[in-house]
Length: 360
Image (cartoon, rainbow, N blue to C red; front, side, top):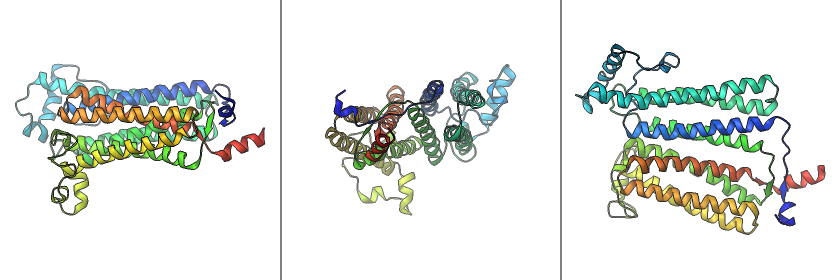
């Protein structure tokens, strides 16, 4: 590191014992990434409605006898998805989709315990206190809300639909990623690493990248909920045009419904946000080059990750959503989000550097 770069770094000194908290938060973040991928597999295998009841405690145990399995299967037979899509399915086929949903819910319970038990330990030991205690409690509350949102999503597909609501699916996925971003941000704030001072424009566009990644994740949730990726499987043209006809994009009335319920418009929006995200990442990386240092390296790495993620998205589309590429695309979204948050956490304001110098 050059002397010029060294003097632009703001040093944060973590108090003793905080390293374990940081490692704990990173471990929980890794579990959330796994949860997002397993959730994607559950959706792609159409397994998400195989468990028709919400039992946070007793539901941790799967059916233990043939009678239990038959009772669970009979409950599934009572919902529209079975009657319309899977009528005639045998018990063994039901077990295959059941295990995906059970595993998804079990992983959610594991995440809850993996967060709550260490949280209690660190709080009682006094390692978590003040604002850090409040932030971690907020993360725990968000986790509880996510569990409720998950059931709210599943419930939407149990009566009048054969799949869950795309609105609720997008909210469920986005909330998981918001929690992931928040956990990484808190963990990074405890790292004690220097932050490179940059101008306000660089900090603003870095934050915009995080926000735009979350918007794109929400848009991807809508695409998934509508199975919009199963149609218009060409790129860069869509139905023969880069921009489809206005009457197609606005076929539903009122117009706002097209943004959430028109498969063509939803996929088009997902493409456009991807282009905007790629362009912003490129502009941001070029801007960071002026200051050099770690910020520039991270910005170019983020641009490379966004490019790789866009490539996975194109491959998912043109191959009509094969499960392996689709899951890689979903995993890639979490990696882009994590790195975007890491990048933001490494940027500091010149005012903060002056304050640190004055204090020294």
